[in-house]
Image 1 (spheres, rainbow, N blue to C red):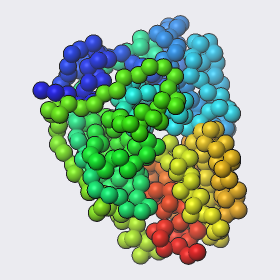
Image 2 (cartoon, rainbow, N blue to C red; image 1 turned 120 degrees about the horizontal axis):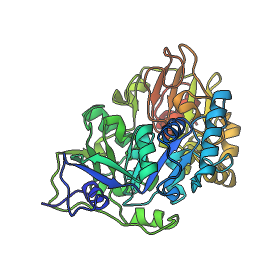
Image 3 (spheres, one colour; image 1 turned 60 degrees about the horizontal axis):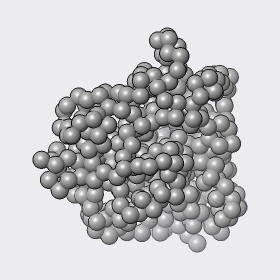
Length: 423
């Protein structure tokens, strides 16, 4: 019996010829990462354990992105702890203000994470890197401390759900819509401790950035990891950035799957996840009919802060104005994306439209800073979660959508299909 791509990566990192779902194995970790919220807990654990040096400082990444720039004294104190630890432990992949970006966009962009890697992150959206063919999963800070100290971790091999994507996608339909449709279909617990593998002819229509977005939200269906086995599009993107050699894994034709979900792109339209769950999904045309007014629009995050996302938003916003009374916040995910937006004229479009542009940070996504919602306010966001209180007050509401729907809604003042905004 053959293996899936995820099983092959685990087997190689466990020094095994093969693995099967349900087995518990010890594996080598190619990268252990943490941010300014999760790293301090790991650092304290390492200190308590008396760890004086890391297994391999070149396989550790510390990205202070959640409260960057520091929003208060507590955030500054945590960032200082991470900064000092990175210096003392000679951590190679530490990023300071001016070079830091949202971790799950920054690390693939820098070529730090590559196809075939086994990545552990103290952040639930570490599953993002499956978009370039890595096995990546989120864990707690204590597990990250262990991985940094030993270079290893244990894993229970997950069974795999194969998602066959076929057909031709419609205009304004993006990777964000694909993953929202899937979560809406199988539920937020439909892939609990499983691997989601995206395959089929339809995947060729999605850019690498969109594949990263798709895998980013795999955890919202409960998945241990999500993966898109690399193709030529992936390798072209990766080879421009790779810092080292890598290995590509693909699933065997006789690999065993837990189940198969089939998605026909020609039958799917852009959608919106209503409060308070990424699984509470409706077609945007249905939501539009309800004329749901928005107070704030956020375009950015590790899910949709890529240049391609911001370019989509710019196409909608060009020669238009943000509706009076609506706050539009746009945050490029990395400094490189920020600079490209400036160079290619997107910043001017955003400013002329009435948006405010922030530095690369997670910020509004987690209700951290730079866009916290007040009681009763409604937001539409390109981020990945809309739980109660996710972006601010427990009595605020967050709708999730792709960048085109978000930008169109900023112009209209209510949630709307991009085709229906006025010239």
